[in-house]
Length: 145
Image (cartoon, rainbow, N blue to C red; front, side, top):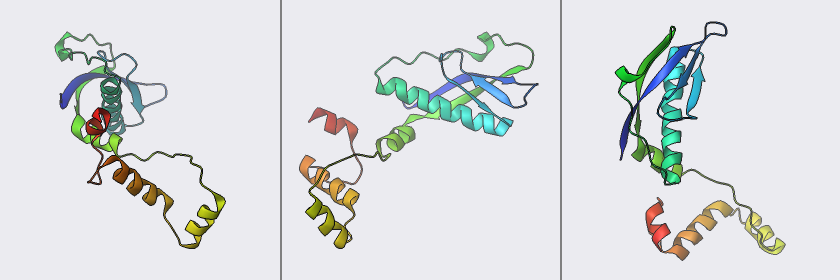
């Protein structure tokens, strides 16, 4: 599925200030914000990342509860939070990661002398080696090769 909408419970923290946000249908998905605006943004990010992890680990995503069926306490309120997953999947697939590799010193020296961008050369080499013609990675295509 590409679009999810889950109810979130916002709890006002009267002692410290700010808000704590939980998702009744997603145990462990919790965040907070100093202001309501920040809490809303953090809730969206937490939901997106939580759902991405569930998808990535091939775990089932529960059906969202109806807001009217969720019991809340004094100082709490429910807000719906949306996650549009195609953008998150693309962002996560294209994030950069650091790799450690080993090359001979003479090759490193020659590359530095010629101002070689080692990361770019490695990426281009891997794309060529794997037969990838585009700059963006198609995660499913690579998995199936």
